[in-house]
Structure formats: structure tokens, C-alpha cells
Length: 182
Image (cartoon, rainbow, N blue to C red; front, side, top):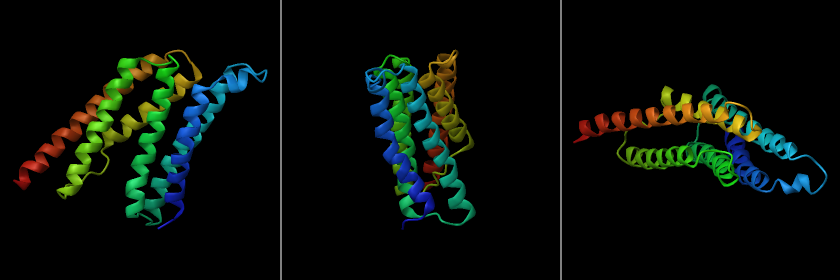
């Protein structure tokens, strides 16, 4: 079912590879006489717009009771694509710690797999408070990194700590729920 929340998630799906391309090809700006900072501004703007759609699609889906199975699939997929595109682009361009990105991506892939198993077992996989804080921290870190602002790497490592914490919380919660089933 196509409704506004799902359309907003689809916009994020479309923006992610475009933003990735912009991050990786700053010469689009510099070859046309613009300072490289315009590449930073444009990729950051795309990321912020896409991130805002994440908030609004969830809010609209809850408030207007427009939750759908399609939305349950594409919303987290769009979130992961956006974050992965930004982090990989930053890593390739040397704008972020490879180890920080590795830790974040491994956690995201592991928890996504764990959530898939949980759904198959009928275990609730709603985003936890820590998971939401982790997402916000990652998005702030990405924004700072894309803009090459001071303290960006410190914020990235704070996001890494929150990422590990929320992953551990998911794992413990899954294990407790799974033990009740057996």
C-alpha cells in the first residue's frame, strides 16, 4: 500500500545512492569552478532532508494509523541504506575512521539479521529507546563528518559507543525472549 509514510521512505531509498555519488565525486563542483565545500554542503543537505523524512514517516504512520507491512520493510531498509551510503562515502574519501565505520556496520548487519530471526519467531522487534538514540547519534556524527566540522570524530566515537550499547541491549532482549519460547 502506498501512503505518505511509505513514499517518504522511498524518497530516502532514492536519496541514499545519489548522496553517496555526491560524496564520492566532489569534482562535480570543483571542476565547475565551485569550492569543494559546496560538495560538503550539498551532500549534507541531502542527508539532512532524508533524515528528516525518517522522523516524519514514523510520526505520520503512528498518528494517522498508516502502518503497513511495506512500511515495516522499507523504513528500516531506507534508514540503513542512507546511513551506510554516508558512512561508506566518508570512509572512502578518508573522512571517517575505518574502525568506527566497521564497528557500526557490523552491528547494523548483525542486529538486522537478529531482528529477522526474531520476527520469524514472533518476537517483538520494535526499536528500543537506545536504538533510537543510536540512530540520532549516528545521524549527527554523519552531518558533522560531511561538513568537516570540528569534533566530528569525537561525535562519531560517541555514536560507536551508543551503537555497541544498543546492539548489546537488542541481543540481551532477544536472548531473554528466545529463552521463553524454548
